Image (cartoon, rainbow, N blue to C red; front, side):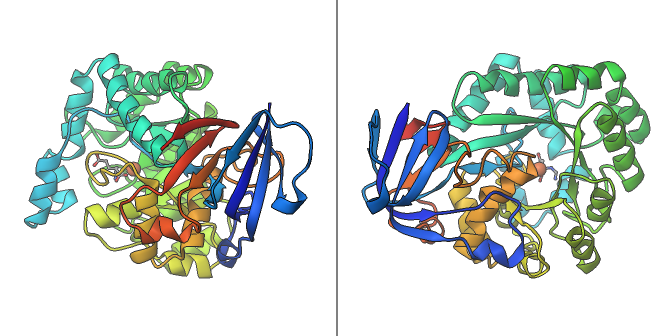
Length: 411
Ligand code: NIG
Ligand code: FE
C-alpha cells in the first residue's frame, strides 16, 4: 500500500536517535512538504514540488499542518488500579511525597489496589488510558510492573501489557520493576524480598514469555540502596533484561553513576543529579530520561535539562504516568512543561519525546525519526508549526495519528 501525505506546512525532519546536546535544536524543517509511505515505512519525503509520481492508494491532506514523528512515552506505570487524589491534596497542604510513602501510603496504596484487581479490571483501566494517549499522539509506550510486588501480581501486570499489544494501536514495551518498593510484609528485609523476586523461574518467564525487555529499580532512601539496585539489575541482566533505574529523584543517591557503570539503557528522573552525574553520563551511551510531570505534580525542583544539553547529553522525555507522582497521560503537556519549567526549546523537547525517547527503549533504529526506512509512526497537527504543542498548553494539537503506516486515530 502506498500513501501520500500532501500539503504539509512544516515537516520536522527529526534524525534517528540518540540526538545529542546542541544537535537537539538543529533539526531541519522542510516547508511546503510531502511524505510517501510504503507499507509500514517512510519511503520518501521532500518538497511538494518533487513528489514522486505514480499510483497512491491513499492520499492524506495535511491542510498546512505540521508533521512530526509519533511520541514515544518511554517511562510509564500505566497499568494500575485505584486513585490517590487524597495524597495530591495532602501534598498541597504541606506533606511530602516521601513522608506519605514512609507512613505506609503512596505506592503501598496502589499495591493493595493492584493485588485486589483482576487481570480484566487492570486491562480495562489501562486500555482506556491508552486510547486517550493515542489521541494525544503517543504511538509507542513503555509499561512497568511494580505495583504487584509478589511474583503472581508482577506477572499479572505484565501479562496485561502483553495482551494490550494486540488490542489497540500503541506499541508497548514491558519493564520488570519488582524493585519499586519493599512491600509491607517484607519490611526491614529488602534483601530477602529481592531473593524472592529474582527466582530463576520468574526471570526466565519474563524474557522467554515476551513479558519484559527491561528491568528497573527505584534506588532511593526508603526503597533500595545502591548495592541492592546493582544486585537486582545484574541478576535480571543475566536473563536478558536490560537495565533502567529510577535515579536521583528525591535524594542524590549516586544511582545515575551506578546506571552508567552498569551500562543501563536509561537513567530516569535525575531531579537531584549533580555535575558529577552529568559528567558520567557524558562519556556513556546511557540516555537521561527527564519526567517534568513530576516537577509539575509534586511542585518539585526541575532536573537540570539545560546543563545536560550543554554537556552534550541526548535528553529524553516521558510522562511517568502513574497515580502518585504524575497522573498525566499527555505528551503534549509534558513537552509544554519541559519548555516552561526545564527551559527546553520546543524543538529540543520534541526530539526528546521522539528520537531520544526511542533510544531510551532501544528502538532508535526503527521509530522516533523522519527517515527513509523508519517505521511510519507520524502525527499530523492542526497547527502550522510544532511550537504550538508547547504554546497551547493543555490543548490537544493532534489532528491525525498514523501508526505503522495506517491512520490509527483522527480528530
Ligand atoms: O516514577 N518514584 C517512584 N516511582 C514512581 C511513582 C510511583 C507512585 O507514586 O505510585 C515515579 O515517580
Ligand atoms: Fe516512574
